[in-house]
Image 1 (cartoon, one colour):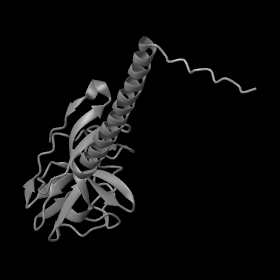
Image 2 (spheres, rainbow, N blue to C red):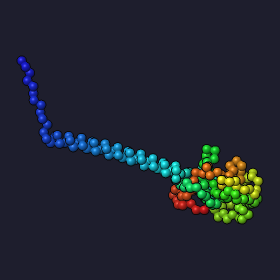
Image 3 (cartoon, one colour):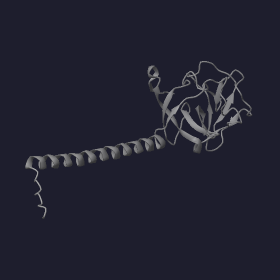
Image 4 (cartoon, rainbow, N blue to C red):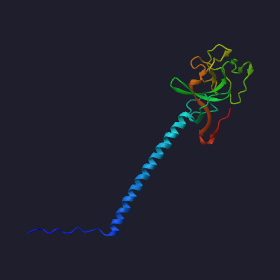
Length: 196
């Protein structure tokens, strides 16, 4: 006896339309997720590129720049090619990043008196950012002429800062510069631009 084949039941139209809608929704959802992930990756890559090339963000460690910059401050710096006396710059030194203030440019003469008063090209340097003056650790022969392509830098907390007054750090070459300190992000009560 032959078995009779039972005819397959055809799903009704409503069921077919529902299944089509579900498939289309799944594809749209997948495309939306992929698009969102690609956008986030692109934005993150651009943010890293900007932070690395133009706007490095740095956290301050130590007290050599107090009271201007304090331990824990988060600062945005600007990468630029020219610096002026009074600018605060970050630079590489022995696999660390130090932050100091530009005192003199190449070719200028720096002299520091025993009480910590600084003269550049025999003119008294106006330093409203200091709360105290100190001779600090200085083993260079004064007056000192800044070499070509270098910057003479000092910390604002002169009694503890190790800077261009010491042959350990010396003058800073332009190739060492990370950027000029421009804007404080943290702490919020000190949020804002940094002035000379």
